[in-house]
Amino acid sequence: MDCLLYGRLIAIVLMFVMYSALQQLMYLNKQRSISMILFIKLIATKADIISKTLL
Image (cartoon, rainbow, N blue to C red; front, side):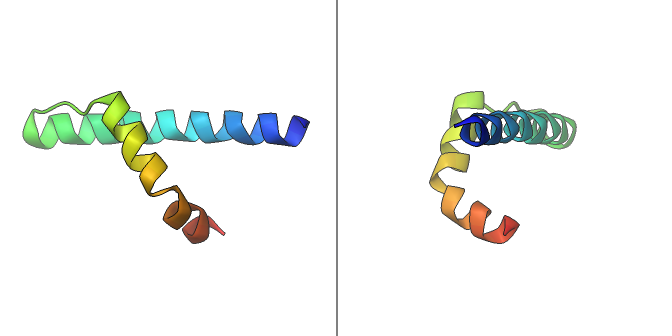
């Protein structure tokens, strides 16, 4: 049970780090913002591909 909780916490922290970096890049390059909700939806739809790439 603890492993599942810690795994989810790590995934959330990594998503926020990726969002922050992507947000800064988009704003610097195109002066546009990225919605957090759309970013999470994109990550959720690509979760299978991401997990296979990480393993």
